[in-house]
Length: 411
Image 1 (cartoon, one colour):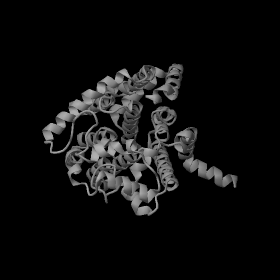
Image 2 (cartoon, rainbow, N blue to C red):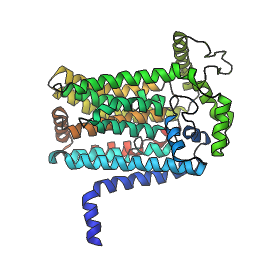
Image 3 (cartoon, helix red, strand yellow):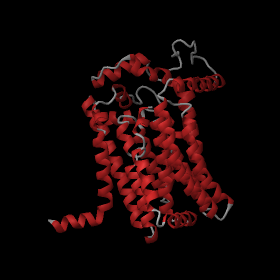
Image 4 (cartoon, rainbow, N blue to C red):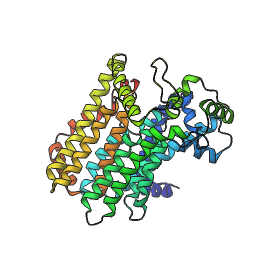
């Protein structure tokens, strides 16, 4: 028996260790899972029988799996998806560890530790249990994996649309990791034009799908808001309050007015809707006055600390790159971090946006280890030399990132 266990551990030790840590983190967030917000169930109940728009794909999958999506069944489905994501990530990291050059294994282990124990990584999916973020992340990971195969890579543009149909924020969330990886290949494998085509197609289709969901899809709903509400309650037995479903009314139905503003989406031109979106963004700025300042300060502080680490890596990569285009790729990895503060203007889920940005950066890092990029390896060599006999600095940095000022999750 011991021999079998030791064999399994020797073959899958990395994966098991990482997966166990993820499971412990999810267990620590069990209160968030048990007491999940009621309105989160609605994301799994809307489907394509009601219209063709974002956030309806997962509900359509649920509709194929069961005719009786009760609250217990839906929560079980959410847990299964979370476990699948944690297991998939553990397997992928294990593969990267096994295939990396021996001299870069220790630096990789450092990044793995930061990733596994970081609050703004996989830990966040159980913290925000029930939201569709984990589904978007799965789509992005599958896309990056497909890029490695000469046949499967052609599915990436399609997956870019799938990501938007999972959730409309995909374009400024995890699509960043996909388009970054595709751009890297387009620049570093010029001899293969397929990467450039895939990069361009993915970008165009993702933008087109997002534009469709924002401006065209509301004109083609198959049911009224009241009918949608009734269908969800009847097939699940879950009772929803109007305030819980009101975001659907505003997003899916142009006839819905924002109470008290006098604005209505009915008969608006695209230019008028864009103008209203800009006004809505600017209108969120006063919300900074009402949020918990302590929480915001903590969140900005930890974001700055985490960003500084990634910034250092990418600046070193830029210095070690041979061509201007290669330098530009790493500059884009830096620019990807700017999506986080910008996204705060269009969303009040501040810590959730930080998690998205941090996960994208880790995808870039593990992708560089797997690609065995020379500029990246030289950057790692520089960091190894700097931290030699200064391991205490890494320990301090790790403790800061691992604790992550838990108060930041309250904003």
